[in-house]
Structure formats: structure tokens, C-alpha cells
Length: 503
Ligand code: BG6
Image (cartoon, rainbow, N blue to C red; front, side, top):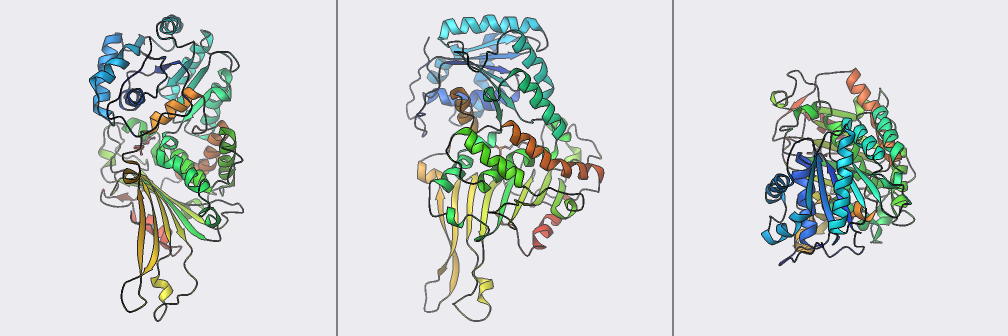
């Protein structure tokens, strides 16, 4: 059977230059939230644009004793609720026959025997040629049972076999340097690194991918992209939502592990990396790794000066959160990249839940002018330095602020902006991160996935901060939902005679 869907009034993304090969995506944890909210809506949108391989199937696996029909019905509800394009009956009806389900315990070898049989049947029915993309949408403590089960059942073939076996591993990749190393060792015991796709969904966001294009497809910015011209960089990831029903997970994670160690460091490395020799996965990831290796190591006497944590008002009353919880929901920090390009330029990072506005952005604050030619007195103070802002989400776009003469008979200077908006330039919202990442994993392109060495290097950088905060449980300042975090976060930058951009 061949999957081809006609899309009237389809989406904006052009077809991928490299079409993915036939394959079955096998999702462990198929009855969970991630599958319903993100994975299947993403696959549906790929299918409805005609971007999935024509020979494709999805096989869900979970403990719940659902039938395949029940599975499809639940996924349909998820797609109509969460798909960015809604759901159209003809598109769904074309995809639905390619969805199947196997119920089983991940620790039971019989589950993998069943999977093997079902996969053979799907190959025969859909022409999927023995190619498998396994997606571990389960908590890390389930990884061992699944990887061992797959391996023992012969469902993972070597990287040079004619068909492929790849595994997508969801974050968190451990909760410390030691556990990340253990997890990587486990994954490495059954898979080659080329078969391992560690997903950080931030890397699939169009605007995050565009950081590299903006830097390396335009010649005018790169000469300014260094300590000579950049005064400092700010990276903000603010959410208005709280932890909701994820209290148990968040209590063992906190903002440092949930956002800083992965999403913010990924964005930072893309902003700070050197131009790679090529766009190939290992050249790009090699340059990103060098940035992580150049991060100034936090020491116990620098952490209190460079890191501010906070907790939102009402966090302790959330379900599954301890009444005396010390889990931070906000972090602001000053970070340095000690290399030739960035020495001395602070990168201020800020992330939090329940903040004033949902916004993720990076802003490059250029050096102030040395001397003002216009007006009297110390006018340099009144000429705002240029700021280049990459708006990751929402209102995706790029903004450049600069000074202009105010119309009139005097040389009066005022800041103005040039603003590129994705919606205006490209006629729609960018596709969801998971669409690109699933497509890339099917195509075997690991550029937008985290490599083992980078994951461990980012943990080894953040570990002293985690250790310090856990060994010195000072009272966490709280902050209100209409704020940008605790006042101490403002003082962190004011101390350097700077201020946070108000997005
Ligand atoms: C996830 C975190 O990785 O990213 C969540 O676990 C967070 O806590 C989410 O809400 C934010 O992602 P996005 O794409 O909504 O910015």
C-alpha cells in the first residue's frame, strides 16, 4: 500500500530535497502525552503535505491493552486538538490505515517477538523495506529494558546493514553528568553513534535553524560577530505556563536541567560557534562542541555571583510539588565563552515558567558609539547601541534597531527598527519542530540532534552549578506571574551597568 495524500490549500514548506526512504516509525510510550500532542500531529502534517515517504507506517507500543482501532481513534482526537493545521478527513483517512498498535510490557521478551511479527506484516503491507525508526517516548528508566529487548530480539541491525535501525532518544538525557554518561554508555552498548538521534526539539524550530543560515548565508553580519563589536548577548526563554500536571517530573528536574542544560546551551552554541567546514552533521556538531568546551567553568565562589534562581508564587501549591520545595522554576546567569572570538563578552541567559510573557529570543547588543557628533552634552548616553534580535518564538522574526535622525531642523537622534516577520515574509507560521526532526531522523541526518560528547560536555559545565545549589539551599526568591523573575536577576545585569531587554 502506498501513502499519498492530496492537500488542497496545503502548507508553506516546499517538499524536502531529499525524500525520506520507506520506513516504519515504532513509538514506545505510544499512549502518552508526547505521542498525542506532538509526534502524531507532526506526522499527520508531514503526511498531509506529502512529505512522508510513500511507503510508511507507524507502530505504537505501550502497556495499555488498546486495540489498533482504539489507538487510531485516540490519535485522531490528538491530531484534531493539537495539529497546527487542524484535521481534514481525507488526509486523516489516508494516514489512518498506516497506524497500528502492539500492547506489551517493555521488560517482557514476548513484546519484542510480537513487535517483530507485526513489523514483518507492516513491511509486507506497506513496502517499508525493513527500515525502522524507534522512538523512545518514555522516561529514561525504561530505556534499558527497551534497548535490551530490541537488541535481544534482533530488531537492531548494524549500521552497515542494507536496512536501517535508528533510535530517537527523548530528553532528559540523564539528570547529572554521571547519569548522562551511564545513559550514553547504555545506548552505545547496542547502537552505533550514527544510529542514535538524541532529540532536543529546540533544534527543530525553524528560527533556531535559521541562526546558522542568518550567520553563514549573509556576509554582512559575520565580521561584526565577535568581541570587537558585540558588547553582550542575551538569551531569554520565558514561558507563561506553570508546571501544570508535570509537578512530579519537574520536582526532580527544575529549570536548570529542564531548559538551561539543553535548550539554552544549544541556542548559545549556534550563536557562538565558528563557521564549520561544511554543513555536514559532524562538522556542525564539532564546532558546537568547541563552544561548550570553551564555557568558563563555574566555581563555588563564582556561582553565587553569576547565577540567580527563583521560584514562581504558587509553585508549591501545584499538584505533586512538595510544600517546602526548593526546585527553581527560574534561572538567570552570566556565562562567558573563553575563546578568541568571545573572550570578555557576557552571555546573559534567562529562563523561567509563569513569567510575564511567552517569549524566546536572542539579542546581540552591539558596542555603544565612542563619540556622539550630534547635539550637546554627553549625548552618547542617549544614542541607543544597535541591537539585533532573533525572535525564536512567538512572532518569529529578526529585528535590527539602529539610530536615525528624527525629521526636523535639528540633528535629533532616535532609535528605529527594521523588522522581518516570518508570517509576512513566508506567508505562514513555520512548521512544528517535530516535523523537521522526524523527517531528518528518517533521512538519517543527525545535524539537528545532540551528539554524545556535546551532551556530556554540557552536563560537565552545569554540574558545579547544580552541586553548589544543592549544597547551599538558600531560600529561593519568589516572583509574580506578571514579572520577569526575581529582582536579583535585574541586579545581576545592573551590576555590569547593563539591563535586560524588555521583549
Ligand atoms: C520542554 C520542557 O523541553 O520544553 C518544558 O520540558 C517546556 O518544561 C518546553 O515547557 C518548552 O518548549 P516550547 O517549544 O514550548 O518552547
